[in-house]
Amino acid sequence: MASAFTVRKGMTRILEGIMKYRHALRPSLLEEFKKVALGPSPEGLLLTCVDTRVVASRLTQAVPGQLFFVRNPGNIVPPYEYYNNNSLVGGECAALELACSRNNVPVIAVFGHSDCKAMNLLYRIRNEISTPSNSPLEQWLKVHARGTVEQFKKLESSGDYKRKLIFASAQHHEDDFEAYIDPNDEFKHSDKLSQVNTLEQLRHFLSYPFLRERLNRKELQVHALWTDIYNGE
Image (tube, rainbow, N blue to C red; front, side, top):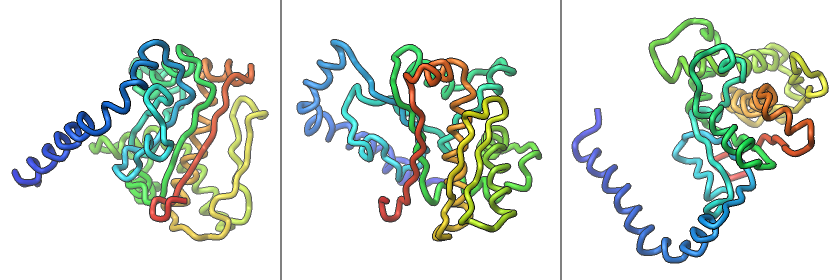
């Protein structure tokens, strides 16, 4: 349980950051804000993890109006069929429509990373994926990262990291792709799972009809990026 001191320290850090921004950074950004107000022209959407060590705007050196950022545990975009068969609509689906259909960004990228706490948890519960959980985080992973676990188990069962892992589409075989997952066996298994998960999101993107239309017209590209947060590579 957090102490009163820890709570105050956390809020103080937020307020100090806001004051520093107002006095040191805001004046230099006013011109950028004016440009955005007159007519923003965003260039892409980046899906990242909520991990505090992943500062997406700093990693990309983005300025106001340049990129949409979507963050959640494990940098996951639920497959479209979840929304198509469910009355609930999540922020990820809405953000994709806002960025790609209403603002016509030409690029989507998903950005995964090493030592991802969500992926570490997914690795630990990978054999319990069909068992409901009272934990919101576990349930989020069990519902939306099933494909990741299925792909990882193919890799895990083979034990051969020098072979490419095939990511096959159930409906559009022209979307099939393959990739090496840590061929030099440098990372722990949960990091390999994180790499698989990052690539799995490309298949999820392709399940959205409004994204597929733009992809077919060559108006949109989707990419997967992954970094080792301990060396920045």
